Each structure stands twice: as structure tokens, then as C-alpha cells.
Amino acid sequence: MTRTVVESKTKTAVLGFDEPFCVIGERINPTGRKKLAAELEAGDFSTVEKDALAQVAAGATVLDINAGVVYNSNPNPNETEPPLMRKIVELVQGLVDVPLCVDSSVPGALEAGLEAAEGRPLLNSVTGEEDRLELVLPLVKKYNVPVVAISNDDTGISEDPNVRFEVAKKIVERAADFGIPAHDIVVDPLVMPIGAMATAGQQVFALVRRLREELGVNTTCGASNVSFGLPNRHGINNAFLPMAMGAGMTSAIMNPVALPVGPKKLAEKKAEVEAKGIILPADMDDETFCQLFGLGSTLPRAGKEMEAIRAANLLTNNDPHGGAWIKFNKAPSEAGAEGAGGGRRGGGRRRRA
Image (tube, rainbow, N blue to C red; front, side):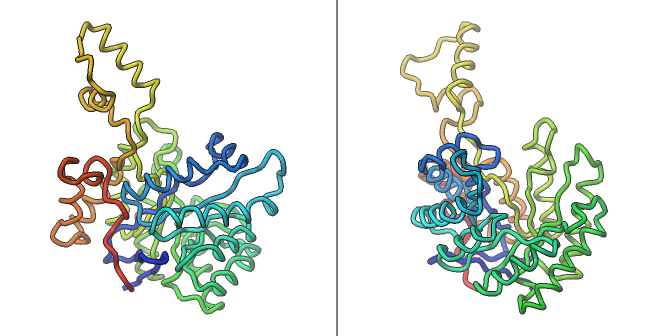
């Protein structure tokens, strides 16, 4: 069986068809997060620290590190991103023990992350574009790391899954020319939004099966892409992930954390309760209020997608004897900071290749 090994200094994560699903936490990424981008430009890493700890507590197996901030003071990412990537990698691996995924479109930032990372990180990413192949594959070989291969090339992203398969095949073959084995290629077949393409789910399931059976590679995806633009995105994601796992997908880049209830939503709900004439105990804390009225939690915790993944691991016998499922569903009083309130700290069981 194909096994892709990713390591930190002390922990190993394995992607494989007979392994628990690998959750790659996506939160350390300033794209679309103006507040985080401003903090990073100002040298404030407090949100990065919180996101790293929360994702691992929720069950992330690997953490993706993206330092793609466009500085107002210097818009050239080739100058600003490499030192920022190095700083974030060093910071995060000092906080948590899971392996990292170094994520950038800037070759200098990729190398800076590879130099700073302890163990054997995952590199994100290479595409079928000729320039990208020539820039990234030598880094993969030099540092002996696995790499995410995204199924688009110089012609862009095709809506035809057969074309995306051929791009993936091309990347695997070109990697072999550099002496990079197929088990170190993790293909992202590109999940399309189901709201824009009704067959997007069917396409990716069929494509993942082909990638597994014909190329023998592990796979990943940006899991939330499938629900983009639709209501109740978590409901769609919760169905999509186990179905993708059943088709053979072995990892996903995703947010494992259910974000906490903010003060605005909390205040609105309290006003609604008060307007209905409901009298609450004066000493009721916000967390108890949230639990009582089904708001969620004031603290970061494992999201519903993590529940679906853990259930699928159990049903596919990638959770022997159900130990991880049982631990995840222990009451908080029994499991401390783990269990239903926050998932298992540190992700899956520790394994060595």
C-alpha cells in the first residue's frame, strides 16, 4: 500500500489507504483574513499561536503554514515572504509537535520553510505548469520531502476530470525523472463547487478512485471548496468528507475547529431570551448559556466535520476497536480538555513508517 510519511521532530503522520484520514489544518493562512494579515505585517503572532494550538486540540494531524501576506510597506512577496515563513515555522513547531505543511507560491518561501522545519514536512505545492515543475521538483528532491501536486497546468483548471487526471499523471512522471517516488506525491484533484457544477461531487469521487488504482498515489483537497456559495456549508462538508474517504481520499486541507461564539451573537441571543420573559440565574456564565440554548461554545472546539471524519475512520476499520471514537465522545468531565468539547490533542495515534 502507498504510504506518504510526514514528520516533525518527534511525531509521524502517515497518509495511506489503510491509515486514519489525515487532517491538514488550514487556519494559519492570511488569505482572506485581513486581521491576521495586518497582525503579521506588524509582527504580532498571537493569532497564529492560538490557531496552531486550537487546530491540534481539535484533531489536526498536520498544520499547513502559509505566509502569503502582501505587505502595505513592501508589496514584493519575494522579499517579505521567505523571512516571515521561516519565523512562523519556527514559532509553530515550538508550540505543537505535529508535522508541518509548508505552503507558498513563492519558491524562496518554500525553501525558507524547508530549511526551518524539523523532520520531514509536506511541501505545498507543485502544479503541472512547466515553470512550477522546474522550480519545485528540485526542492522536493533536495530536501527529500513529499509534495502536494495540484491538477492544473499551463492551460488552467479543466472542468474535465480526465484532463485533470492526465495532469496528475504528468506530474508523477516528471517527479520520477527527478528520482521522486510516487508515494511522495499527494495529488489534489481540485474539488469544484457543487453550486456551480452539479456533478462536482461525482467527478471527484471517480477521479480519486482512478488516482488510487492507476497511479497509486495519496490524495488531498481543499475540502470546503465543494460547498462554496451554498447555505449550511457544514452540512455539505459533513457528507462530502466521508464519501471522499470511501472513494479513497486520504487527507484534506481543512479547518478542524468550530469557531467560538462571539460576543455579538451572545448578546443578541441574551436579548432574545430576555424579550421572551425568560429569567436566568444571575450567576450563569456565558459557556453554560451557550450550551443551554444550543449556540455552541465560547471556546474553540472540534467541528462537526471532525466528527464525520472520526466516524468514517471507525466504519472503515481505520480506528481499531473504536478507541479514538470512544475517546472523542467522552464527556468533558471525563476527558479533560479532550473529547467532545475539543477533540483529541495532537491528532491521530503516533505511528512510525
